[in-house]
Each structure stands twice: as structure tokens, then as C-alpha cells.
Amino acid sequence: MSKNLINCDLGECLIPNHDINIMPLIDMANIACGGHAGNNSSMTKAIKLAKHNQVKIGAHPSYANIHNFGRISYKLSDKALYDLLYQQILNFKKLCNNNAVVLKYIKPHGALYHDMMQNIVVFNTICEVIRAIDTHLSLVVQAGFKKNTNISLLYEVFADRAYDGIKLIPRSEKNAVLDDTDAIIEQYKRFLTKDTFQIDTICFHSDNQASIKALKQLKNA
Image 1 (tube, rainbow, N blue to C red):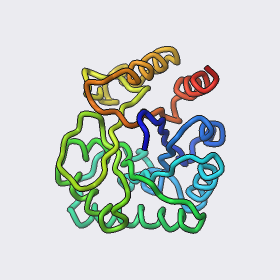
Image 2 (tube, one colour):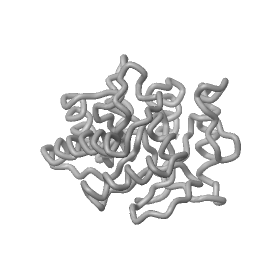
Image 3 (cartoon, helix red, strand yellow):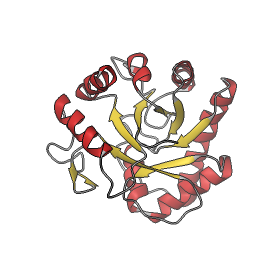
Image 4 (cartoon, one colour):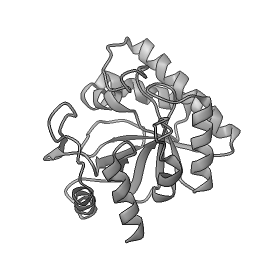
């Protein structure tokens, strides 16, 4: 994959649902696969939309917690976490196959993503699931993350999240999410010129109206 591709979390059954407007503006779609949001119908709809717009497709698994949108961490046994992710990703991959598209990568969602960054056991379990399903799949991790693995890693930053250096400010803290369109665009452009660490993809969130406006402005620039 080329450098600085734009990715976005989609298929999350949001109201209003902006998937159809966002998909033409991005390069990679992280599609919710039933943990924090989504079902076979919403997954299939998002897969078809990505295919139509020639967008790379990724699975966006999470802890099974629709009520809290996957943003609460769970202490699961290695086997329980493995089984949860294996089921979500394998089911999603089958839906991709059914629609004649290739699943390209995995990007964990919410609390699972953060746990993966901080807990080597969680990271290793996710890698084990990838090796069991398809060794060609890449795994999206935060830029600056350093772990040894034979899984291909894609390094990510967030256009619409606040940083302390290269460390994300937790959502629980004030001003952790950027809600100003100009500020998001400025941070996106700053990341394009960053050369102190590897960046493969830049994330915009579909539940942030300022991010959607930023994507449209960047597309029309």
C-alpha cells in the first residue's frame, strides 16, 4: 500500500448514516463486523459500497459491546479473545468472498485497539488470529508502535484526535477529539510532511461532523 492513504470507520449503522457520502472520499474502509456495531446486512452493504468506489476493505473487529460502542475494555482469557475475533473476522471475510472482493487488513476498534497497543498478550492474540485466517492480511497499529511480528503492519495517525507528542490523548480527557474542520485539515497536512516516524494511513472518524467536512474540503481542494 502507498503512503498516507485515508482510512475511515464505516458500516457502524450510525444515524444519520454518512457511509455513501464518505466512501468516495477515502482509500480504506474499516468496516464494523458485529462487535461494537454491524450485522451481516450492514457489512454486505458497506462491502458493496467499497467495491463500487474501489476502496480497500478492512475488518474492524471489537469487544462485543454494542451498548458502549466497543469503547470499554474487557479482561478476556486468551482463548475467549481469540475465539471472539476469529469469529468476527472469518465471518466478515466470507462476506467479502461472497461479493468477490479481497479483505486487505484488520484494524481493531476502540478499547480493543488501545489494549492492543498497551498489552503484548492482546497484540499477540490478534496476530495469531490473522495467521490462522489469512497471513496476507495487514494489521493497522498506531504510528510509533514497535513490536516484532511476521505480520505486515500499517502505521496510522488520526487527523481528528488530539496528541501529546505521538501519544493519543485519551477520549476521557477534555479536547481529545478535534471538532474544528480547519484544525483537522491542518493536522492532516502536518502529518503528510512528518518524517520522524513511519505513517502509512491517516484516519478520519465518520461520527465526527467536522471530519466529514474536512474530507469533503480535501477532496475538492
